[in-house]
Length: 161
Image (cartoon, rainbow, N blue to C red; front, side):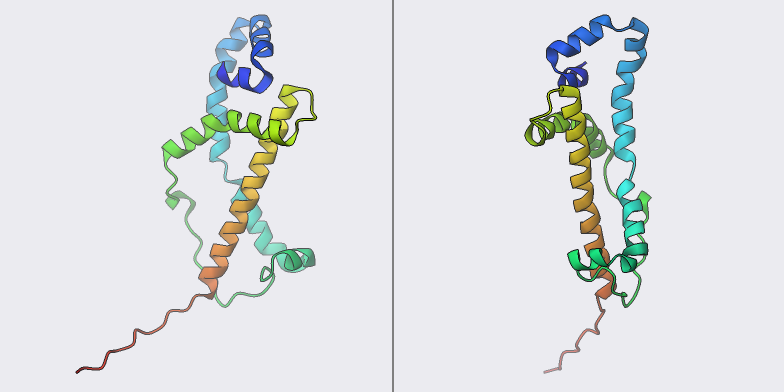
């Protein structure tokens, strides 16, 4: 109920729910949080990052925007296990449930010229996911490069007095 009223507006949300089939409401409304949580668990940034690493040396524009992308690395760091990622279930749950609110706010800030509340919220959600994903991909690539270029040095022995 709250998500519907945020996405399409309070008055329009009530009108939609009053006109909707009760069976649809019984099945449809409880699936909203489930779909938000499942959507939050999709790690699309990892796929983009793999493609980026695979094809970045062929795209010269990426090399001009992000220096060091196409350069060969001295060693390839071990890939982190996605299951070992320490993102808690609470963080996923809260992030998924607050997503309609964030999409509405971003939509109002970035797409104020769009008249439809639903379209504005969808555009805001897409923009938020894309911008957040771009930052996440860039951060993970920088971590990868940092790990690839690090060197382990011998500990200097101290002279005995």
